[in-house]
Length: 379
Ligand SMILES: [Zn+2]
Image 1 (cartoon, rainbow, N blue to C red):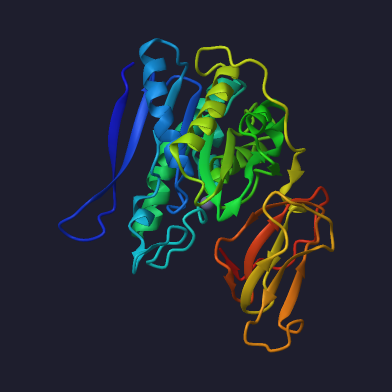
Image 2 (image 1 turned 135 degrees about the horizontal axis):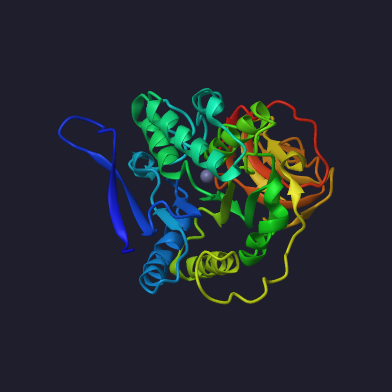
């Protein structure tokens, strides 16, 4: 099957112009497994765009040589709406400037709709049930009335990835080590991805709830398994969010390393031909998302970090001071912020200016923490 390039139409931002999403397709349409990769859903997180750009040529070559199983869809720039979010020379890609929120939230739970569409037809054949569920899921996405640019984009991304067995969502943090969100039910089988990428933190997350892009397809499958326990229904697909270091860790050299890691993962799991060898040693033990401490500013000020990204932190350690530069007393000017978790400071914001309620750093931890209130401002 030849490589194809598609311009998927998005909502026009105004009359007389248009927007589209660039998508590449490889392999055999309809063949399994089906994989979906996209990058820069948060449009100012660009490391993954270069990783996928590097992989396009490899995929094209593998496809031409018959070394590709199934079907692969790649959208290196997943968010054309956010790519145009420039304000006075600054690019802001996390939120929709038209008021529709975080681009990686608010993907609808279509599990009930899919269940209503497919329930009567599920039988004793798991493969046939899977086919019916994927078909009903595609129809449910098609029927979802999305309004506005951000929701239209969400709908388009869901439609591209809805029937996939593997979904890779490439992000990054402000400043961070390499880390990954892995579905907890797939860690045992696919944990080698964290090793191949040299992750210093691997966060295991439950996939049965949430509104992020990576949980949209898994929630559907969980709902179906809950609603029809007497029917054989496969495990939800493997969906992962790669956090490729920080926003400024962008370049062809670093992208090549990550692309090679992803490629070896694809080889090891039979998607592309070739011998990847043994995976490298894992550089971290997986920890639950619920054990990760999200440090939140209690006052306005200038952040002075005491710990670099990748640094070890004990519960109770001061990670940063929030400084009021206008306070004459040096000590009184500093408000220490402590970690509740023992683990690795795996990410922190790029901006050194914070306001009360703003999340600014994250520390991994093995033990689940009390949920607490979500940060008022989540950058
Ligand atoms: Zn992101």
